[in-house]
Image 1 (spheres, one colour):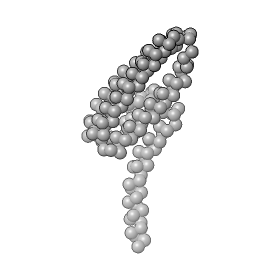
Image 2 (cartoon, one colour; image 1 turned 180 degrees about the horizontal axis):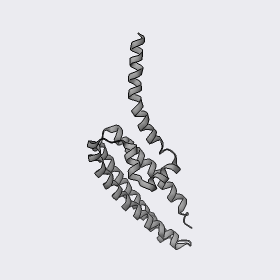
Image 3 (cartoon, rainbow, N blue to C red; image 1 turned 60 degrees about the vertical axis):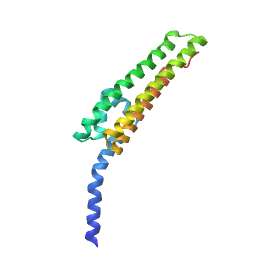
Image 4 (cartoon, one colour; image 1 turned 90 degrees about the vertical axis):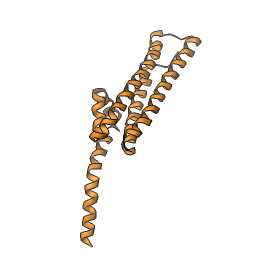
Length: 158
């Protein structure tokens, strides 16, 4: 009886150890300051350490990642251009300018949503479901930090 318990405990420990290491890498991105700094330094390296992909998974995943980053950069540029108009104006804006700004911001949000939907579909095909969801969660955390940074940096319109 004791031997069976020892075998079960050993088996659980052997399974849990790699999972704990992988989880600790992902847990490191729960602190928003740490996540912001790590993403600014080298997002791709952070993704690689968080994902722990096999060679076969990496071969399928990295093209999806690169395509998504390009699409995301385009949406972010679109949003930045719209918001730069708010800062450049630096005075109360007209209703027409405000309507155009709202339209441009919604278009940027739509472009980002399309990029995320495309990425979700592709990453779920490229990776096992748990790893795909891990990456989707990671990108959601990065998106939340960036959204917060934009909200803090840009004033409400006058």
